[in-house]
Image (tube, rainbow, N blue to C red; front, side):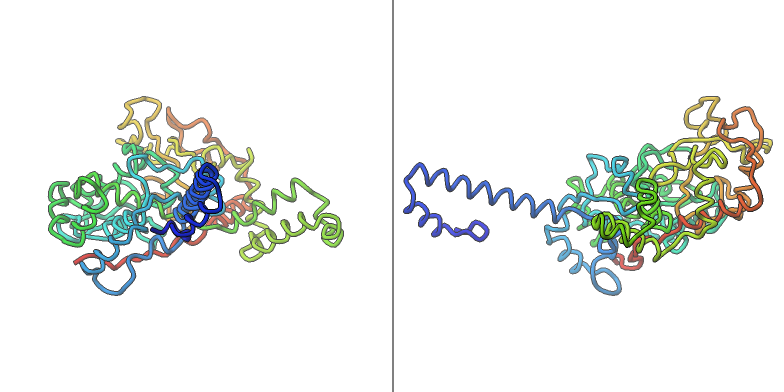
Length: 432
């Protein structure tokens, strides 16, 4: 018998050394210590920083994912441990906002299954459209078209929202009609314009693919169901997070300068008087200088977060989005405007209101607004500066802004400084 590195024989030696009662106490302490160490090791193994490419790099190998490879992957119990994710710098300020439903814990096996489903066009009725076709890694998980394009080239009526940083959000879609990422993930499958399939047929297709069937049966107690398809895709999408931007690297430096002011001006004196603060400041400064914010972006940051620009009335928090719904007047001049959130709540105050999009990576996700009607960030800034389009339910925070031409350039520069990398994701390895 062996308990980690402690053998049964060694315990017998301990027993000879002590009286019976002392031996029982000693053995209890040994076992307790082993349990604590084991729990600490397991907790460490289960912690994962989102953005780690190891989460999304797929099952190792090349080409089509074979049944043998799937079985080997599923046989590793490490892939079924419940993960405890944390957020990268910048997003980490929203750690308490991180949302994973209790009935859908994150595991490596579930992330990998979701990754495969996200890129698999066989979920659509004619095998031509996947989730990635409207939310693609190469387009920062949006799509560079005004509207989403589904089967047979059909176009929807709204711009494709991004699928990154969704771990910080519950309600999904521009109008929030899906209460969870799990619900959102399966909506497009049965949408006649998007993937044009039925949930029943999608499940039938997956059941007929051995590589998928094996994964569903191992990961979920009830096997292949449309609800489990949604759980897997949602789990994968929760790993898609923006990595630190120039703005994120600058913020810790700015915080220290605000806290210590002139103390940071004379670095030689600081190093001698307070070496801990000196090292802390210099390490953060060095990181920021590796991807610096321009002077224009710094001025834009000041405009963005103050009443001069009023941007942070809605674009606030870790993801620079308040997850609420606002009427900016976009499209409200039409004879039959898209009423957005109103169609979900039937509340008159929600007429023309749409969910706040994130500023993160916004330079990569045009065209802009729910209807994709604005091609550039300069157009977006002009829209806000003029106070939107007047209508009865225009949001109270949308007002004319007193901005100079330089102010507008600075705002755009700041938004560009919120651009960062995304995790590397394997796109091609799918079961045959």
